Amino acid sequence: MPEPFHDAMDAVLAGDAAALDPWLRDGAAGRAGLAVYQNTVAKARADALTGLFPTVMRLVGPDWFREAALLFGRHSPPSSPVLDDYGVGFADWLEMFPPARELPFLAPVARVDRAWSEAHRAVEAPVLSASDLVQLGPDVLFAARAVIHPAARIFWFDWTVPTVWLANRAESDPSKPVYWDEKAEGLLLVRPQGAVETHAIDRNQWLFLDSCRRGLPLGRAAASVMVTQPLADLSRLFAGLLRFGVFTRLNLEPSPQ
Amino acid sequence: MTHGSTAGPGLRGPTAGLGLKAQHYEQALACPAVGLWFEVHPENYMVDGGPRLAWLEAIRAEKPLSLHGIGLSLAGDALPDPEHLARFKALADRYEPFAISEHLAWSRRGQVYHPDLLPFPRTRRMLSRVCDNVSRAQDVLGRPLLIENPSLYLALNGHEMSEPEFLSEIVLATGCGLLLDINNVYVSANNLGESATAYLDALPAHAIGEIHLAGHDPDPELGPGLLIDSHAAPVSDTVWSLYQRTIRRIGPRPTLIERDDAIPAFEILMGERNRADAILSAGDEALRA
Image 1 (cartoon, rainbow over the protein chains, first blue to last red):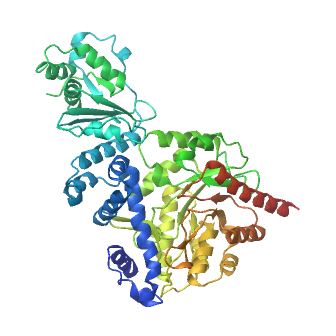
Image 2: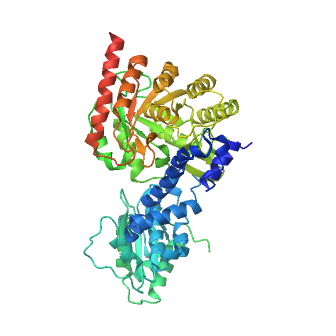
Image 3: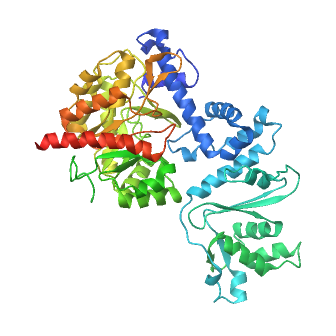
């Protein structure tokens, strides 16, 4: 059985300021105290989004961000007290948000922020290293599937989202020039141990990782690169990805297909 | 259990502690103060892995820890969310806190979480709901809860009992303890025109397992007539004297300095923590004398 008081408070927090008046000892004059709850809820939602989307915040400034966060908070309140899970739809919402129309990089930057926070709190897992592979012959290796580390997030963009994102992190060098340009770029987030690390990746690295992510064996991942770049140095490419810590283990079971 | 609860209140267990902030992890781990303990919101650690859990693990290896929940919605009109309770229990099992606490408030309805501690009319019906919710939480967690008095901003119609009476009934019915937030007592008394000392004297002293101290701010529009439990300022002089008075009455209890906004340097927070520690030591000596 729902409590009528709780129903009324829900209505207040959804914008109906008068809904609780019958419970207020001072009637409408008691609404000043009600504002404390309304403000606390709105502030907590906006603070959570500020913590989860720091790069978006740096790009638009605190005032613009706060306005947007307050609106999003009303539109999509959190569903759980674990606020790390909040803001799943923020990037999509920014895409439709009229004041962001002139800022086409905001939504993709929000997606990278989201991925960073997922990487930061992903489950611990070992990292596959080159020394784990020395015993394996080429046939076994080509048939094996490299499993992506649970903290790794892989991106490919048609525009320079990675450049913009990397330049607006707290730790980035503000004197470095930033270009928003129709130039394809890739980005890899990993957490081999402790902190999240970021790497710009090229088209070949992305093709290879995307194949691995889709569960294809290493031979097929290599072929996906060779199709467009027959002269690519695959062992160097694979060694570089291993050094980033993007794989957790090798799956030697035969492929399902 | 290696910490706290078996030692009881007093100088051998946790004395005065701090809310643990991510920006202070290193100093918290290295701080040698005797009796120092830390408190965290479990909701901030309900993650699968990563640096936050690793820091908590390292700090827990050195210091007693308390889990202070904000999301169980014990004064809600439904039982606590089973998934949230399961995540809470997993943290309690992993970190073995010396205390687990929650609020006499609600925050959750169906699929919407209001990030605040919301009030309700203290009716007999709500008492039975809260008791059911506390019992369910304690059953799942396998440990007793300490229930914290909220700060109140609304004079409501429909209360059938005072807050100390309501809390005492919950203690009797569920076997839980109390987390006494003295700043909340002061803020509520100020906002509702009631007496903080009468409130404090009406609480069952034996049930109080922990004390919170925090700072408040006047409402930006209404001024000191409406105080906000902001956790953004040092503990006020009035709250310090209410604290001293309480320790004299009930004896020492693990005490926490809370600060969640405008967070100063670790040393500044330790200054407030040491002030609480000194009051606890004096209370302890008075008991032994």
